[in-house]
Length: 345
Ligand code: 13P
Ligand code: SF4
Image 1 (spheres, rainbow, N blue to C red):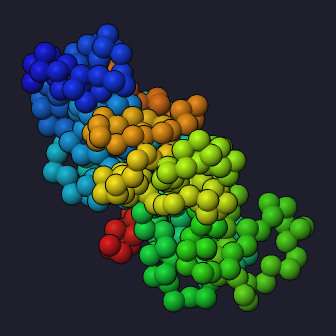
Image 2 (cartoon, rainbow, N blue to C red):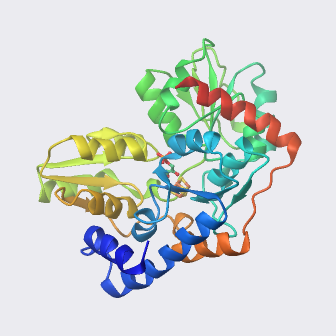
């Protein structure tokens, strides 16, 4: 594709969202990325939170963690460039040990993935022997390796319901666990970090045992935010990601994974929508669906997702950086948990 064509395409979609001068620079970089992608026989997977010019130009596929994991499992390209945070690129590597998997940023973390270690999981397993362990995909490979199955926001309830056991451990997102408990009608506890305070948490009537992780982005949305937007726009439809607090989810009209939120906006007729999630996604939807009015609270960006840019995606392909590696003994055990999840739907 020529730079002029790319610029026109981006301007049509993003002319009201990204300044023209920025689009002109982004168009040049996007064309370089497309050329390098072809030359290196690479596939680019882009999470729904990518910056609008990247999201709408270079990825072969865009989607949520679940959709991108399915796609990563199927690709026949030599190189996977994962435009998303590190745990996502790591999941692609777990599924493709022989391929080169690149993350454009050297370290794109996630507060949820940072909230738990493999040793924390081993201690929980020692404390609740025989209780199955479900871990959110927003964790690193060594944590996935300690668990029985992974889940994403797109299949968390289905994964919990796939167990016949009375009780499961669900890690590490406290809010997602509470939201899944509410959705599945299960009783949840989140044991204290201080073991001396955990004297009476017999698992007899508890069906989900949680952890203390939080998404640093989604925990910021409040019920008051929703009330104030509803006061201004009574006809607004509010969508909240399930990493938001249970109170925020309860005050919203719809809660699901990022791709399910996009599909909902596509399919539902409403005067305007409020997205309670990383705000780049609102821009991405606005670019794709210009007839929809998107309200978003744009003070809230994920600092980790924001590290991925068109420029460092180009450099990833140019310099084969930053290579994701997972020790083979950990990878094999983590793969079992990811594949078991992918079989569920
Ligand atoms: P999704 O799987 O819904 O895309 O969510 C990933 C994530 O990190 C949300 O903060
Ligand atoms: Fe992690 Fe939250 Fe950023 Fe998603 S938005 S990558 S959960 S910190």
